[in-house]
Length: 141
Image (cartoon, rainbow, N blue to C red; front, side, top):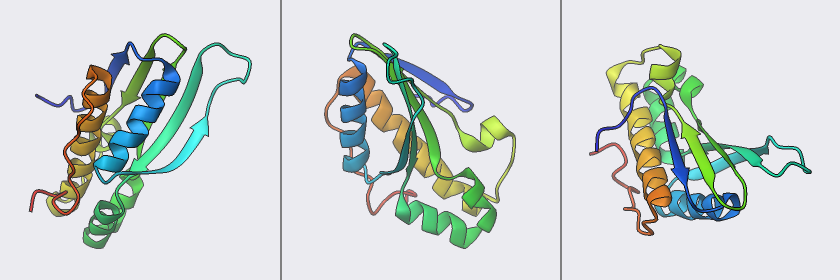
């Protein structure tokens, strides 16, 4: 599967709550952490919206150790919107979206995190339940 570089949107026939639960489970299995979750919707609105900040402590440490400016790109942002019938997940590649470049050594952990994130989201919206664990091999070493 070719990974889109600037941003992606995936739609799921699963409702908002189910998609959010599946994403949490998928991120956990892949060794990713939801650092913070922000609700962006009105409590009375039929459609819900949350912003998830996702990272991997190991990749964050590696990226910042190699180049402190990498901290500006992490954690990655994932927006989940939806209602009871369907949901939509949006995320983007931080370096491509913002147009900045990191050194190749510092870019590798950010790239690994983005690839893991994309794999988990793809599995969740396509209905696959198994996501490969990338713990211990997150930068391809």
